[in-house]
Image (cartoon, rainbow over all chains, first blue to last red; front, side, top):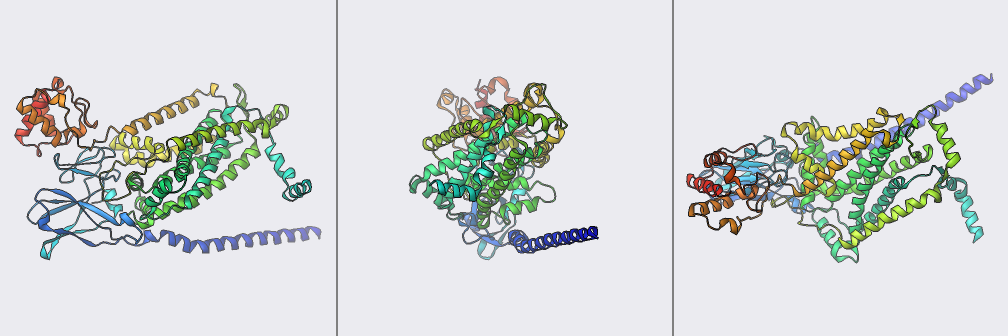
Amino acid sequence: MPDEAEEDVVSRRRFLNRVSLALSGLAGAVVSVPIVAYLLSPLLQPPPEDWRDLGLVENFRMGETVEVAFDEPSSLPWAGQTARTAVWLRRTGERDFVAFGLNCTHLGCPVNWRAGAELFLCPCHGGVYYSDGTVAGGPPPRPLVRYSVRIIENDRVQVLTRPLTQTIAGAA
Amino acid sequence: MRAVVGWLDDRLGLSANIKPLIEHPVPPTGWDYTIGSATLIAFTVQVVTGVALAFTYVPTPDHAYESLEFITRGAILGGIVRGIHFWGASAMVLLVCAHAAQVFLVGAFKYPREVNWLSGTLLLVFTFGMAFTGQLLRWNQDAYWAVVVGAAQAARAPLIGDWLTGILFAGQSVGGATLTRFYATHVFMIPAVIFGLLGVHLYLVIRHGVSDPPVPGVVVDPKTYKQRYEELVHKIGVPFWPDAGWKDVVFALAVGSIVLILALWLGPPELGNKADPTIVRAYPRPDWYFLWYFALLALMPVSIEDLFIIGFPLLIGLLFVLLPFIAPFGERSPRRRPWAVGIVAVFGVSVAALVNVGSNAPWSPDLGNLAVPEQVRQGLSPTAAQGAQVFEQRGCINCHTIAGVGGERGPELTRVGGRLTADELTWRILNGGRNMPAYGATLTPQETTALVEFLSTQK
C-alpha cells in the first residue's frame, strides 16, 4: 500500500512538473510570435523601387562620369543623411546613360571616380574598375552594379532605385 | 550600529553564505591569474560609462553624431567619459584575449573546467560583438561603411546571405531602422547576455575552484584530479579574499589608471565626418581591434575569399569549442606544451603584424591630389616633363611612388628606368597586369610616349 501511495505522489509530481513547464513554454512561445515578427518585419517587406529624377540630359557632358545623389525610397523620417543615396552616372551618347552603384563589389566600400585615370578606385582593399564598370584590378569578384536608366519627356534622366543589399553583393 | 549590522547580516546571510564564497580557499597563484578579474572590472567600467553616455546619446541617424559632438565638447567632462568608454573598450578587448591566451597556456581549460572555457569563449565572442556594435554608434563615415562592409561579408554566406544582410541593415538599406538596432543590441541585448554568461562563468570558478598553477610532469587525470586538487587546496590553499584578491585589486587599479590616463591625455577618438552614403571621399577603417581582419581581407587570395570570409570565423569558433574536448587531460604546464606556446606566439605576432599593416593599408591607392616632387622634375626633357604630368593626371601616382611621393598599391617606380626597357614599360602600361589596369584605351599615343620617356629617366 505505501508503495502505491508513493508512486501516486511521484506521478502527481511528474504531472505537475510537466504541466507547469509546458504551460510556461507555451506562454513564452505565444509572446515570442509578435516579438519575432515585429523584429523581422523590415525583412519581410519587399524593397520599394522607384524612379528618381537626376536632372536634364543637357546637364551631363558626353563621356563624363559624375556622382548624382537622390532620395533612398525605403527611408524613415529620422534617417537623416542616410535617407540619401547616389549613383555614378556616365553619359555615353546623345541619349545614352549608364549608372553604376557606388559600392565596390568586393566588400561594399565607396568607389571613387578618377577622371584623369578613367578608373573607379576603392579606398578599402584596392579594387579598381574601368569606366564601363568592369574589374581592372584588385579583389572585386564582379563588375560594379548597374542601375536601369531612362529618359522621359522633357529630357529628364531617371534612375530606378536599387536597395543597398543588391549593390554591395554585386547583383546583376 | 552593531545591532543594525547584525540585523542586516542575518537577513542578507552575508556571513552565512557570501563570506565563505569570497574566502573560499584557492591555490597560491601568480599575477597571471589576475587578468580575468581585470576583464570583469573593465566590463564594469564599460557598463557605468555606457549608462552615463546613454543619458545623452540620441540613437537616430539624424542626431546621433550631433549628440556625440555635444557629449565630447558641450557636456562638462563628457569627453572624459567618452574617452574612458573608448579606452576601456580597448582594455576589455585586450584583457579578454590575454585571459583566453593565459588560460590556454596554463591548460586551465582542461578537466573539469571545460564549461568554464566554453562560457569564456562566448564571452570573448560577445566582447567583440560589443566592440563592433560600439564603433558603429559614432555614426560617422567609418561607422556607416563598417556596417556596409560587415553586411557585404554576411552576404557571402551561402543560402542565408541575403537574410543576414537584411538583419544587419534592419531592412534592405542602411537607414532609420539600422542604428536603433545596433543601439539596442549594444546597450541591452549583448550586455544582458554578458551578465548571464558572467554569472555562469563565476559560478563555475567557485564550483571547480581556481585552477592550480601547472607543474611540469603533473598531469590531469579525471580519476585523481579532483581529489588531488582538494588535498592541494587543503594543504597550501589560502582564502581568496584577501590573500589572493589583493593582487587582483592592484592589477585592476593599474589597468584602470592606464585607461584614465589615456582618456585624459588622448581623449576619445575623433568623430571625423558624419555618416553620409553619398560622400565617397572616405577611407573607411575599423577600430584597431578589427584592423587585423581588415588587413586579412585585403591580403587574402581572391580565389579562396568566399570560403575564407565565412569559413575563417566559423573555424576559429569551432577550434575554441573543440579545444577542451581535443585535449581534456594530460600535461598543463606550458613548458611541456610547446605547441600551445607556439600557437599563442604565432597568433599574437600575426595579429600585431596585421594590425600594423592594416593601419598603413598599402594595398589602397592614395586618393589625395599628389604631385611628382620638384627634384624629380628638374632637368627633364620637354617630353619627359609632359610624361611627369601624365603620371599625375592619369592617376599613376595614386598607386605608384616616385621619390617618396605616391600610393603604395603598385610597385615603387623610383628606379624603374634601370629595371625595365622602354618597350617593356610601354607593354605594361598599355596591357596592364595582375592588379594594374590596362591603359591602352585611356592614353593617347603621345601621352604614352611621354610617360615612357619620363619613367625611363627614373634610374
